[in-house]
Image (cartoon, rainbow, N blue to C red; front, side):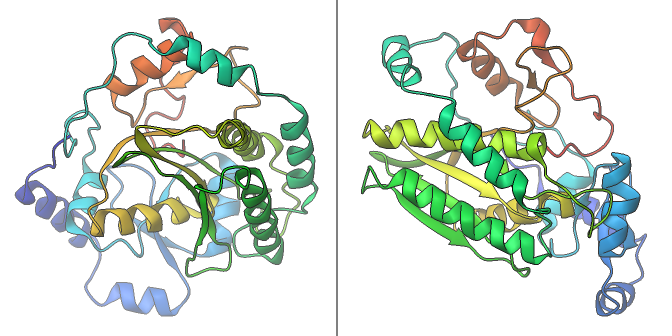
Length: 314
């Protein structure tokens, strides 16, 4: 993957800055407002936390909260994004399926009993809104559950990643022989039609969470040792504009962590087609193809998200 040029990044920032008076951000932030973008073309709009949910999320209008993003390169990409040309250091992804015997052995260990139990607990929280007490409680429960799942392999390290709000994200790290990292992630927060509404979030995104929890359980119980370091990310604050993942990836960029690939699992409990689908909007096509092959997905089920013209939350 390679970075876009500094000039392009600075131009992107300039286009955003011209739409926002210099004094405005500080004044808006003091008023408790947040700056969000719904697409690359959107210069940004200041909204309240409640408006994020009731006027955007509840109406299926996707957005990114860019209030705390200060990096010129990142802001530039948010104004003009191309996953295939935005690569930093190219990773050569496989073009054929291999390690089938090893993979099938691990897959045979997977069950539905754990995911069903975990999903019931997640859905029993009134909601998992990132600014509510329920959001904090759900994060604590998930952290303890992930630690319990990972405990069968003492090499796995499970940590919380704190944010400016009281719903930490969670990272489970399986060290490999290489510091290069492959990440599987999903968000665990949920909302209803407003910040105070009931939001069980069984599909969005309890289903994605329990899928990667079960994958972690299988790998931990088998004492699997990967070549590349593997991380399982459980993000908070996604419904508020990708807040949790943005904080973590900002940290990874500043510490020069080399991430070879990231696979996001979202709403795994339902597919309009009735089959597993790999979405390729805001994604690297050279990675979506091998992911689809590994999951035995036909090209017909590698598809654009229906929300392709706005920022996808997958």
